[in-house]
Image 1 (spheres, rainbow, N blue to C red):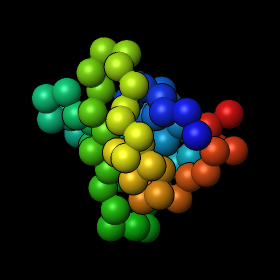
Image 2: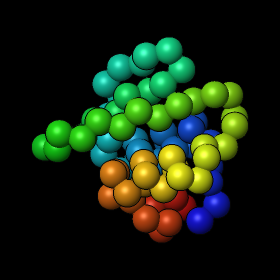
Image 3: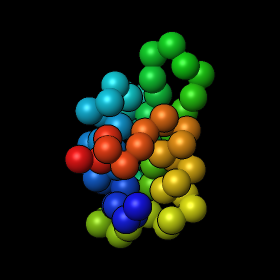
Length: 69
């Protein structure tokens, strides 16, 4: 799976039912109704997320590669 930028991941999360709860500096905090999970997505211009962080956020969000398209 090719890592994407934080900005692109935010768009994917919003398409899949996640809502922006707040912004803390350059990190956008997302939550989903019915779960206690909070995702902190770093948005540093258009820099790609590092592979480990990207995979971790995808796993927590319950997303797969198919959801990126």
